Length: 216
Ligand code: AP5
Ligand code: MG
Image (cartoon, rainbow, N blue to C red; front, side, top):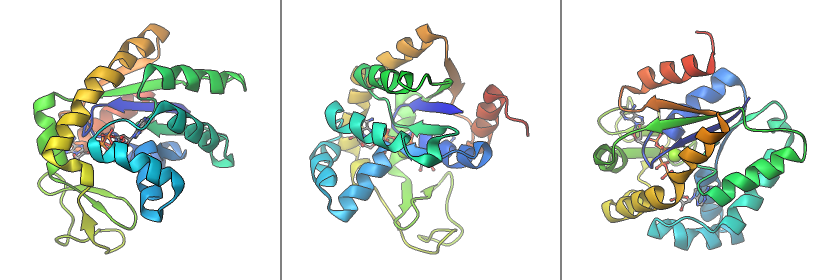
């Protein structure tokens, strides 16, 4: 299944994708994760992306589209994938369609996780991620078993640099301006499904599975 997860910053895309990939047995591709990984390794791509990400701006389309095109050509994507955080502009969406069309393919479903703006700051300022495996926690809503340590690999948890309040506001502005128009784009294509992301992590996961017709 070729799936796109959409939603504002902090809507729960990464959290749900980490669970859905086990269910659907397809890779989870987060452009944000790929950029952060490249920043950590000090690559050219990381250097290009960093200045935009630190400001809460989108990385330019010409950098991002090529990156995804190469990633979805890899063998592990032959049975499908979950795209998290891509596409984020109409230009990215049009290019994704064009890339898939070349092999007679298309996106099967776009799941839009909805959450009001006022909940986003609380979600993002409490987020912590494992610096080793990237598993996501929340200090109040989804804390680790041992304070400050990942349940899976016992490594330390860190806060993302773009989760400072001023940067969160900028990311949110950019979401409304550049990414929200995609809702109409996919609605018109007839592949958009909308889910309320305000419930619990598990409740949202159940709703997503139901929409995808995945059996419990
Ligand atoms: P990216 O990493 O994609 O960030 P984002 O879209 O801003 O989304 P987040 O990762 O912040 O939120 P999420 O929806 O994944 O929420 P999460 O599950 O973690 O992108 C980062 C940057 O990279 C961008 O700003 C841009 O610069 C660049 N970039 C990436 N893709 C790009 C592209 N295509 N084009 C251009 N630039 C691009 O959950 C958040 C918190 O809430 C967690 O703590 C979690 O535990 C908690 N939580 C989740 N669900 C629930 C729930 N139901 N109840 C309570 N708490 C919950
Ligand atoms: Mg994420």
